[in-house]
Image (tube, rainbow, N blue to C red):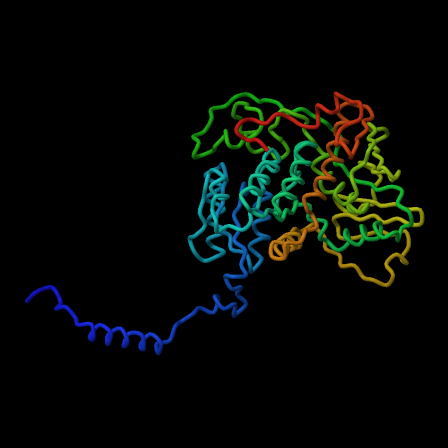
Length: 428
């Protein structure tokens, strides 16, 4: 018997095709409830596909906040450490109940994926601005940890890049989405304290340093730890594990922000919100008696102060007007000059500065294309204030900043500290 079927006539072909079509129409199609958004699931059309870049200690916490959101599908992680790539994949795959989280050593491979809508950037501070702008040019929205920039020049370029590309950018200044901080800023912004005279930020140390080298150690295999990628745009230096694991080391050739930039990116950000996100101060004095005083164009003072706070937890801020004041901190509590400022309202106390609400704000804005609370322009203004204060601290003298030209006035030495050279090929 031949292994080949006899040729079918055209009539037989049409009859068979018609029967198959009827059978397909009658046979039930099984669609999983998750695809329809039932049982609490979010349908694929409403999900935001997210990738991670540099998911370490802080990034691991952020990742947990993202995974709590039902409309997030986390699909990829890029990290210079093989061990960390594996750890993040294990967390993500366990959460989603699959083995689909891909791992990469080079973050650009994540950005090349057309299925990814947004990225979480939680690298060291050296990478934040460069990774964010690279992501924006690749068409991705981003949640970027702080400090967002290393200098004034990066701050300006970041804001301009997000404006030109239309990307949704959320700086990791999560206190903007906590009720008591938001209420305190509202009192200041809306005149409930009278004309605003002073806003206070806690710098967690006033020390300006220059980053340096440590004793060279044997460099690991690139697949284990990609040291060259870890340095990225920073000036080259030999491998040392202490530099690899340091939190505040910025791995650059320029001025390191210290507490003025690290905590300032939180506390000064809230002060900037209190003054309605206006341009940063124009005068910065060096520290005297534990305070570094800056002045906005309208005369309101921004004061970096280490001591003298009401014990309300870390990251305290205080806003003083002609008729009242308010102080708040990470305990979730506020102290007001008068109970009348509450105007009968109750403000929810959420201590411990969780980022969940900030992540939700970001995801909602990815869908609506609105500006999130920690948008790029707000981050730019707050970071310029921190960088300029750090320059006054470093030079130990007053500096004057012109917001129209984004330059220090008649001050070549200060202007040289506005930016720093970036290593090839990392150009902004």
